Image 1 (cartoon, rainbow over the protein chains, first blue to last red):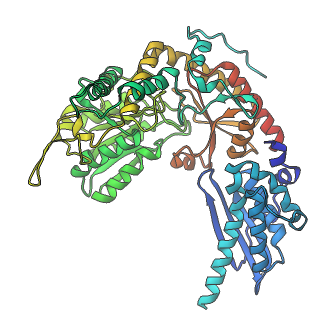
Image 2 (image 1 turned 90 degrees about the vertical axis):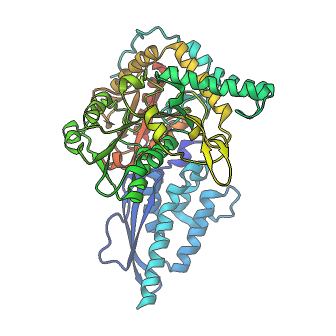
Image 3 (image 1 turned 180 degrees about the horizontal axis):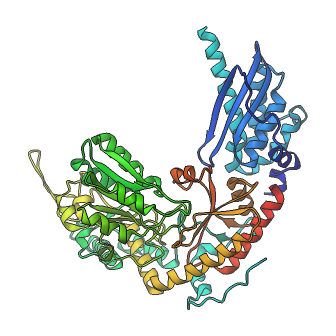
Length: 148
Length: 415
């Protein structure tokens, strides 16, 4: 276990200066995420053009891994369709949890900086909280649309 | 500025004590283990591990059952521990010592068997803002079941009970006062004797959650004058899954059984069952015999060292840790009560407690991070979590130095 592998420069930078941080107003959907084990709380906001994420922001407080992961997420998903976001989450999830994962690091871009997390199983939930929260926001948006 | 490491004024031979704890002699992530999480669960001395092994290798059978030799030995060891516990907390009689799974089960037993039959709408249970979830949720459940109301004594910025508010909240509707003796999240020693005396004047029964006090200070339930006292084995060098409910005999006698089954009965027919006497009325089923015997060995180990000696040395550790941690830039100690057990909860500016926990672990240092099962305490201080270092008499001043060095490292890395 090497700490430098977990707290890479990209992670430390995104924790100190999170991108797309704040409330998105107006937004098409938002959801709250909470990790009771360590007290991480965040809210993800999205606005959409049909199926495509036009803008995404987050706010909240948490550990360096959860804040940096959320910040990296916002940069990665902007402009992507829901299907593309879902596929990306699967790649990130494999990156976080599987040693033998067949993950194309080049495709992940900056998100690849999270690969050190898999050596720290207690921290996987920190890194994945924002993805689950975004998923919930997109689901809710879909549900809201379907009722209209 | 680093403080000069004090010369301990107590006569504990900590090096020898540490040799009694096999688990302490190991490397974690290539560094000697520094175990500063005893408030979550303490470690076990060889004497406890050996007592359990010896029991399983030589003496195991079911208790209170057979006429054969092993059953008699197991029963003698099990009931012998009841007397060890009675003496340890100075209860009047072994009838007042009920073995349970832990503090949590003890509180639930009192909530369901003592409080529930007495409660109705308009009645109040009084707890404090310092409580562990184990002394909150059982009362919420019983309030939901009966229509009673849970009242909470507020705490101050130092993490002490607001005594003026306590006297306002304690009243004719109060049916029970249930308090932590020592706060697990902050280390505050609650002036329970004073608070119990006030409750007694109004005839209000009292329960103490002693999970964090029993390992660190001499407890005398007659001197405290509480009606119920709950504690766990695993925080005081004993096994997990064993704990004690002390209850005043007259109250326990009047309480209905909590769980039904074997051991808690005298006779059973389909028409009528006669319940067993105290304390077995509350011990349905085959008990945790090995755990109980381990608890007895733990108490004997603590008594051989001396609770007063332990308290004095741990106070020196607390003072040294407080002084050194205060000197770390950006570190804020949460919980600054005048009277504290050897627990230091803190935050570090720019470094989340969870990150502190991970970074310290790579240095071989075990601390607790999170809400410490006391989310209302975190809410009061408007923080999601703290890092908590808790000390036992097997810890050293050198280990506190290593904690401080590792925190400086964490700060340089992330803040």
